[in-house]
Length: 491
Image (cartoon, rainbow, N blue to C red; front, side):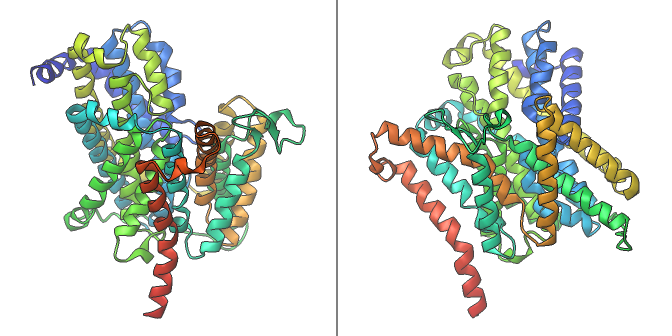
């Protein structure tokens, strides 16, 4: 408790508060721009922290990290354009709410869920970090494979009205993910002699194309036809009873996100889709999901932001980054002369607890900026389609190119945009494609590593308790929607 009080005193300096506030605001902006991920935002700001003291520099990066995870939901809800991979799950119910004129309500739920999820994860980090980190260490290749398979099984829940179409889309994502070098042997696959394909296809240009560019193409069709869509903004605020009904979903999703963040290699995108699936599983009226259900916004947002605190647990206690962003933060800590691990709490206790307090404050800042900015954010919907559509396409091009300053990514984005346009026409869900792209490499590489560990013996997958539990849950998750539909028809 004395260290926590010392952390509160340390953070009450104008320069620390200023840079934390600046980092959070900058993170929201970065997250809302398609293609600019949390990892990229933190990496871009890293050089600026070299001349700062440890607390100020690290909290600036943490502000960018937390803010960017939240920022991705803004464009996801308003213009069907996920700012970050994690917000691809928010699109499923967020954008339909906007189409119903409930953008303000959707953004309010997103802001509250993000803030609560982040606060829960940081509190868990403060209370039980070492114990949880030791459990995360038990995850090896078989457990990671089972976790990825569990993530893929969610396809059946986000497939929409047609399970077959959802499975086809998920399979397409897995096929695209297999392009590039073999993860174990290093042999080229499906590259057709093209050097651009040797390193695989980045899923972010495809995500931008499937969601953002396809929406722009559809808007262009509406502009040049008589199918003008008038956007309305319902100014009815979120009611207490509505929020009260979401509390259980938010807390459950925060737990899922915190746990997922602890597992090395699993990030906010996986947590968001898993939480969305669990929210739908626990719901009585499952048919409302995908059509604009507030729970479909609350779940992925709470889970995605709670990953931030969860990912810090193995980083600070064991020196193992939980995801790509914390890998950058690991370098930032070492540059500041801080060696993450068990001795960090012994030798630099006041600094660690100052960072904890800063994380709590960053989530409070998210809540304040988010709630104050909702009316401003929704003004985007009042921009005429003739102006907004070219702006979206411009952001798509900039976002795709900024990944690696590569024109090939722009080509991939436009191809994905055309495919996404036809997906909309034939009512094929795009989210399973992204799920397959994200989880495909994790699934394959860990499956192959597990077989190397066991020298080809498949028993490694059913003799390890955590693996067995995850595989059973994956099977249940995959087939539950199918059986529930059959039972619903019979009744």
